[in-house]
Image 1: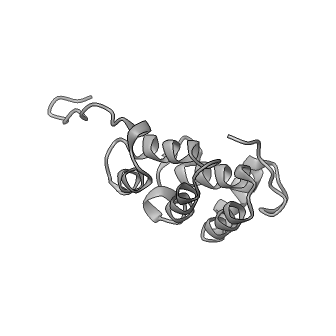
Image 2 (image 1 turned 90 degrees about the vertical axis):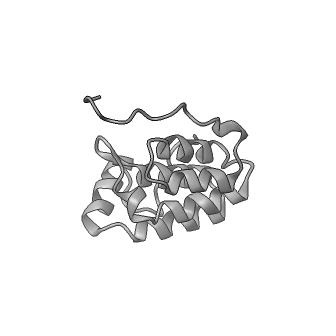
Length: 125
């Protein structure tokens, strides 16, 4: 960190947070957005509210622009929703995918090694 750059506070205890709290943390412009998103991803198998939250988050420009090397945070969410394998999670993943630019859609499909979003079948998280 450079001198004068504020240090983030301690990491939030995402394991005890509600879906609404995690959603708010993921939408904030703070350093814990990714931690909140991955905590929501961990809840996919048992929590339909987490699925709905992630479906909406993946469509938000701030999440789509948040990159970890080549992969955006939105890609991670879409991949997790696809891997969850429920009809609703796939619907939300496909909706979020449709909002990506055509170039980003192609990059994402190459990343998944899938000819189409409907054929994408990533492993479960």
